[in-house]
Length: 449
Image (cartoon, rainbow, N blue to C red; front, side, top):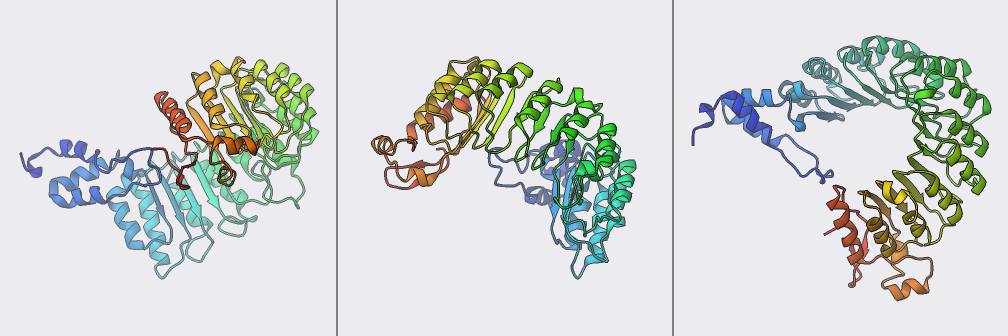
């Protein structure tokens, strides 16, 4: 075989792309750069090859520095910075604070303006403040998402929020996702600076401050490309509904998230009737709409394909039948739905949704046994994604089907059924469920074999 130095650098760069390959399903085992670094040290040709390969290698796409030394940041940036597309870093406070800040600036510069995602989580200090963060953003004209974590007393404060948002908007015109520290919600405090945002976010940082209607109106007027509305933990008023339905982006809004919101069934129906593109709806916790509500919902917006019923929804079997016969669902969430019986599985299988479901979430619903879940997966030929969570405490009471019958609503998880479910999901291109199985020796098998 020829020596490495005798191979063309282009071929070596191609070979280097295949180092550090891991199983994508093993997301808990992150990539490292040891193989690339070893290859870089092998010869002069390899050094150039690694520098070329770094621009495309997936191990070099994302870096995170949390109280890292200036030397480490500088070394990684020198070799792999050109391939980085996502960077996160924390508080710049150490004996080398000034040097670490300069190394971060050099690292961002080494990406040659190709950075797409930037995230900062840390406090303000004499070595790192809003101007320094803004300088980093200005070196990333192609940035698509920016996250600045922390309280509104850190790098971004109430006094400099508007200045920072305005400057970042000019420097990074492609931003479609921005989260900054604020006193109210993003829609009230800064989102109007970013017209390409995809989500109108009304999630409030606190409840004490007065609602800022001028900020909401500016955001709804400016963010014409939005496709989502997040009303998580919001008290939804008729005035807010009116403003959203009258917004320029109303005809584009596909997703409505009212998780943990305080909202009446009547206002939800107004959203459903007014948002023509609505296809993804997430209900609040413990929602109790009644059968008449669900009948009105499927009539108002039969195009809904993704439905999250929310934690502890009060619907019963008849309400579920209305949903499944009136909608062609691709995703359904059933989490702690205590009023449903085990007949709910048959209701789904006997409805048009059996032919359209691609994913389903069944969490902490002990009325559904592993046999029921297996029947569901078998009866829905397009179903490839199953988020199935079962309480281990409940399973401790049901080491066999007889005990499960004694305990009534406590479901029985049978190992062979779980294996059959996993095999079907994987055959359809999905991933095996990680539901734990109580084995005969009393131990838990938490991962599929």
